[in-house]
Length: 304
Image (tube, rainbow, N blue to C red):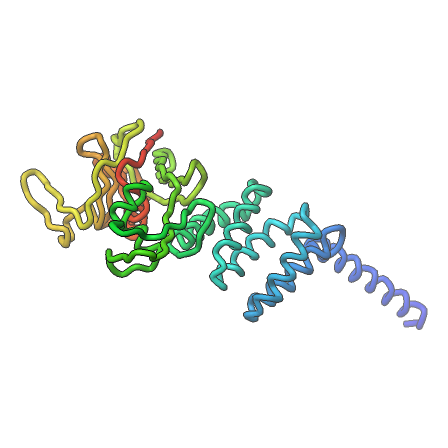
């Protein structure tokens, strides 16, 4: 084969490989107007995997600030929230997730961001960090957790969790965080989900089971009683709280419609289905969390 022919073949091969590389790079988002954004996201991913949260955060913030409309920005906001979570910077994580949902509601990252936002919201609520939905309170003589909870339409358990209290004892001049948001519940039977809102804003979404044959009543109700470790009364029989036959699980939140309420479960596999006798059923850890957050009088709206 002549030298000229060999050179020609090599040139053609190089052109084909180069074209293929360009196509691949474009497909990966490494070229074009968003290539730099993709590169920054890659650097941030590697830094986060190596445990370098500061480097990861710096690159993610550079991407978000410099390329606010890039298709990679939604993923960067999700990653920024996760990086802040690993450092227990709950407020910063919440900002990242809320910004993603506000600006990229239709993105593939939105569902993950919503789930993570719910988790972060609970972490903040159960911590001493004051947010715009909390009030500082200095304990006065005669104060009790019960009186403070009643005055601010919250629960004693939430006050204890938010302030790291191991008992109900408080002292004058002690400084407390008092959660002041108004919580409400919406149960959507069409997708078996319970939405908890705070001051009419998304707080957390929980999977639930609802009534078979569409037996869960539609309408607006109120929580009128709350029972930890409830007894189940079944056709005259008394089923104790620790019995594996007690379908109420670990918590009960009763409605002002007799016989209906929200409760835990002894069969997690049924969550997500229309299978109950009409009540709203939750995983036990979820109903325990909800029980701590919402006081009696909380509004519950159930929709088809």
